[in-house]
Image (cartoon, rainbow, N blue to C red):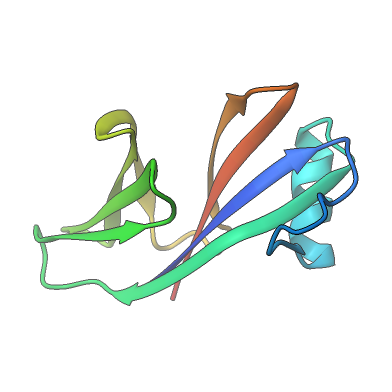
Length: 121
């Protein structure tokens, strides 16, 4: 099983100059915009990996402060731990039978937000 993790920044501001950000694709932007209030969504980082055997965690570092640990569980389920500044912020379980992505979100400074979008295949 492969996992792709995207760190996304949501903001009402235009893309900051000098930052290596790109707009997320239209499908993801529409999905996020249907639930969240921001006008713009920028991809900060993208990481991919193949999950090891059941019960072994795979860590993906998305920024200096953000990473995810993904563990394959029995019955086609993954457990995802979102880590922020070295601490577990949230743990979610997601069935791989679902074709939709798993989205984790949180507030950031200056009325913006961050999202971690996980796709599995």
